[in-house]
Amino acid sequence: MDRADGPKGCLATSAETYDAVQAAINGVAPHWAGGQPVTLNGLFVRWRGLVHEVEESYSWCAPELGNDIWCRGVLARIWPRLPARVRESRQPELDALDERYRRATIPWPGRADDGDDWWSWRVPRRLEIEASEQRGGGWPSGWEMMPFPKPDSVEVIA
Image (cartoon, rainbow, N blue to C red; front, top):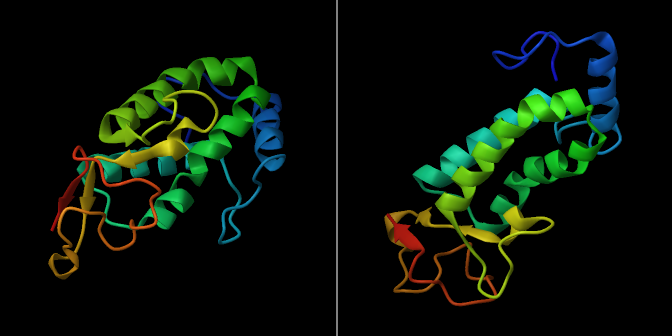
């Protein structure tokens, strides 16, 4: 949690709680790729932004999605380490974002829709590509490494 910009309606964060949250984060992922410190609010901002982008139509390649969902993996790894009060106050927000992501994606064929890293085994329902990249009914450029044929429920839009 960031001291200055906690979620609306959240009880004031004590220094002890703040330190416990930062210790949990530092034990898993202390810095973003650019070197800035990772914060709980920053992880939620990134997850919320990705969920919104996937809902609208994801315009990057499959490996980029793997990079983008890094924030959700960090949330999963720090969650059990967070103080109970923080988990209780943020769980509804996380659950809502997760549900939106599930609705905006489909599970990989043959993969369970729950369990560890469930978000890693999903594909956006809408993939946005450049008109010049359109390729018949298969995966668009950047997605052709998927180990299964493009499901009909995945829409490719130009």
